[in-house]
Length: 382
Ligand SMILES: Cc1ncc(COP(=O)(O)O)c(C=O)c1O
Image 1 (cartoon, rainbow, N blue to C red):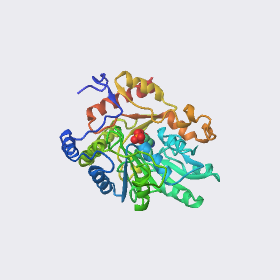
Image 2 (cartoon, rainbow, N blue to C red):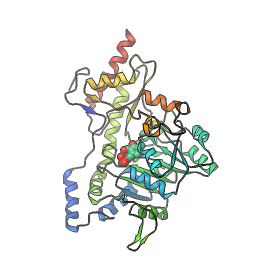
Image 3 (cartoon, helix red, strand yellow):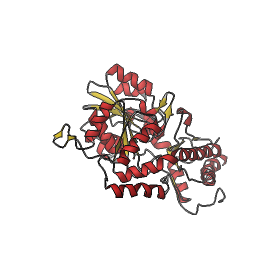
Image 4 (cartoon, protein in one colour):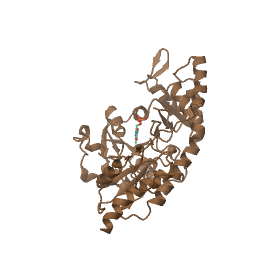
């Protein structure tokens, strides 16, 4: 075991992909080699859709090649246009999916505890051109789903949840994925559940799932009929095999993530100017990320802490800095005005995500915590 202040021998990254036993994947692939069905809704694809629906506690799952394509198709499926209100504090794909559909993203502010859209700020951004709200369950912390639905009902808007971070998260009433008109998931390598690349849309009914399944397969109804302007967004049998092999171990993986999160909570407790995440916001969290805030009165800045940790081989990430409207492509957007989303600006300045993944050793958690405590405490004392 390394002592808390010695450098780590190997760099520790913010995440490390979780892999199923290779033998389990190979066994499934032997069937693929026998059948020679590689994609287009093969048996592994169908089995993964069914098993995920059961595990996630939802009715209708459509698998995708990645989460971004799932977002693109979800927006298309709801025939959205005009303006959609969304979060500036997210991965760029959230807004890019809107722009690709010819929809204007309108940025609203976030709430400091959940890092997700603030309903009051959403309401202030609604115009006659608003067609929907695209909210993000940031870090897997649930949005204020009830207030958002109330707004949607009052203003006749659709709601899509970018639940890329929220695999297997439950809120007060069961699966978080049951809220809104559609939710999308990402199964990217860095996510709690991964198929290397992959994603899904959760639909509320069979009719919507059918429309989505057509959209992801070029719009084909049958060999001679194309009903909608579709795209190729299908998940292959190879990726489905990785997902099927991974699913049986997912509970254990989330449990190990919880142990890591609890380790940080224990070792980082009581450090002035360091604010820890509140996992109690979810009835069942997934511990996808461990975002801490370094407040503005801290003796070391967030960026200073990033550099300090990096010099000891600990690679943290400043999710989500820069904010989406700070990227060149969005700077000319009419709502790209920091005065409209001060909490998002503050979060982008203060947050850093610490390493968290199932096989991160608890000794490493203690070591990283010691490295964080040092500059925050030293300068306080001096
Ligand atoms: C919030 C959010 N939305 C969308 C995506 C896009 O998912 P994918 O990488 O599977 O395309 C990601 C991450 O990758 C994400 O973090």
